[in-house]
Amino acid sequence: MKKVVEIKNLVKSYGGKDYQTKVLKNINLDIYENDFIAIMGPSGAGKSTLLNMISTLDKPTHGQIIIDGEDISNVSNKRLSKIRQEKIGFIFQDYNLLDNMTLADNIALPLSLNGVKNTEAIARTKAMAELFGLSNHLNKYPYQLSGGQKQRGASARALITNPRIIFADEPTGALDSKSSKDLLVSLKNANERGNATILMVTHDAYSASYAKQVYFLSDGSIKCRLNHTGKREQFYDEILSLLASMGSDQQ
Ligand code: ADP
Ligand code: MG
Image (cartoon, rainbow, N blue to C red; front, side, top):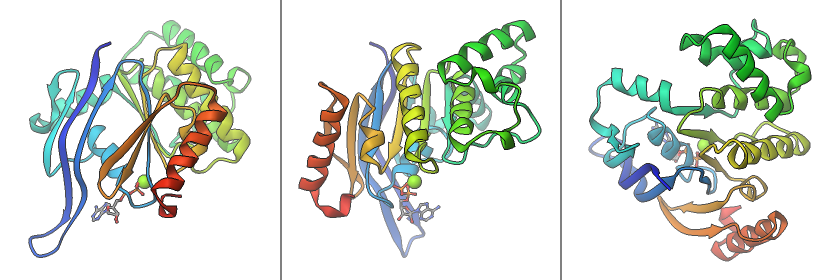
């Protein structure tokens, strides 16, 4: 399998000369094609900070981030926006759908921005809608959709350009348990059937149990890793046991 992202000795500090907080101390992580990785950690552990740096939205203090063999630490802003546009899909906690567009137009938006032909855009939108269980909602506007439908729509939009990697920051954070499950099953399908490569950060063991690997971030570094081998329910129990053994501050 090809390496999509390589993170080497990553450090992130905030603050000035006198007062510095090291949020991330020394992160090393490789992400391969078709991985579905969850990074878990308590609130304030630095999950969003890490994701923002890998997804080119923020810069590390030290260390390297290599995407598809290209070190993004020293590239121009113009090149960065190109990498973002061509290689990366984002799913945020709060959907970010545009209110005055139908769901279909929201999902197809990255294709329109890239100048993809209308007939092709429609076909790809339909395929994505099917993957995310949204086929019957394409003509609706965001205000006519539930939170779960909106988040699946945002996920379909993130995947439609067929990016090299999808980043998701607490994607179930604003959803009830049924909608969370629907979203996670959809992401799992995108990974298994659509070959998507996904990196998700979450504080939630249930969400993490849908991933193929879970890494535990604590005190600014990755403490351990669990591989999903058996059933999801069993993996969930393994994650909970590991969290318990790491200390209650993890939950
Ligand atoms: P998580 O997503 O795991 O909850 P964050 O990455 O948001 O954690 O934050 C990690 C730590 O970094 C927190 O202590 C937070 O206060 C701090 N932090 C995040 N962004 C900034 C910033 N721009 N300036 C200063 N401190 C920050
Ligand atoms: Mg966060």
